[in-house]
Image 1 (cartoon, one colour):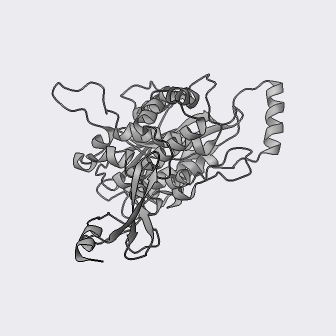
Image 2 (image 1 turned 120 degrees about the vertical axis):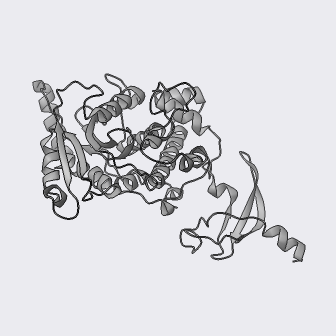
Length: 385
């Protein structure tokens, strides 16, 4: 190989090696470390260059770092996201985009993983120490005999969503005799988690406490409704009793109070209203509902990323001022958000490079179980990279 050829080969540089077992996966040198080894032809993207890592010897292509990796057809992620946030059903979107339902579900799964990775990275840049509201958003999966409780941790003043979890519980409220008989037959065949509401609340609370631990000069202020499950979890925490350097203060708000902006739980009520309004699978009295819990949670994460990083914090802004997002209102610097569009829609996120909370990781890996489903969800190998 001539000197000229060597120069042409080593002109390419990537931020990291896509091989999780490589030493360059988390931290690569500032100088070029991969050399070109050829190209291959595709119908969707034309000629694609291939490279080889000088450290591990594994080969990869430019498409390895793209959100369109391993896809055979290009569908606009922006179009999918804005249709999803606009309340369109999956069937409606598939008809409008001229694609199959499975193709659309695959794109939403990728969007959600992109959003989860972006969110995990942005949480490190968050500087706000605002009060945290946690409330359970109630919907249902498969049928109304399997209500779902989705606790959502959100900043009181910014409306910035920190984390979400999920649990399936028994149907409550009044039922006719035939409904009671059907519920008894279903619950005898399908075992539901006991203490799921407390477990899911504890998970999002743990994420919130890790992000802004209580300090001597400023306690961690938690605002919830008067649900007994929440109080039981909080009372088991050492910080609630003032043990350690900081303290947790738990404020409970009655659910019967007017849900205005003056209500301390306004951010939770606002988020619940937006989810009910914007996501087709959470509309009231609709034929659209979650048939699969894992897919439903990924759709929720895709929507929440739009809510946090793309949607304006307030509709009305003073003339001449650029509308801020919920992320900026939460104390994330605007410079850290400059490349949100590219990170979200173009640059593929890797699980092994994303510091996820347990609930985020569970959503990423599709580990939420649908009631009555015995088999684990299918997860493509590329989602684990």
